Image (tube, one colour):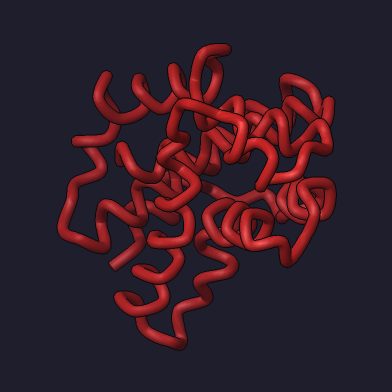
Length: 160
């Protein structure tokens, strides 16, 4: 969960940097917790492990805390700064940058090709696309905000 929460925090920062509001931010972090659960389950983890302080508690602190390096990276991207400028001008490491690219690579290798990864992990894939310069933060957040409503708990429990 710890690795995934950093990527979700980048998305949360972008959401805030773009001025999308508290409801959008809350929805994004909630869906991010589902993606965190799906990744954990893919390596044999239990959903219950992620429901405590070291899971969602740490995720909330990282996504909503103003001192989070990953959230700040996303916030600055959402405000229009270039990734190279942010990374080049910072003395701190936002672990979510490298983690994002590694997680997508892991998911692509670990899960079957028929598994709609883009639909199961839209935040993880979206952040990776933004960090690779394939889409803008605005386009990425718009794509996330129009996803259909689904039962996150059912999806997590029904995942095998």
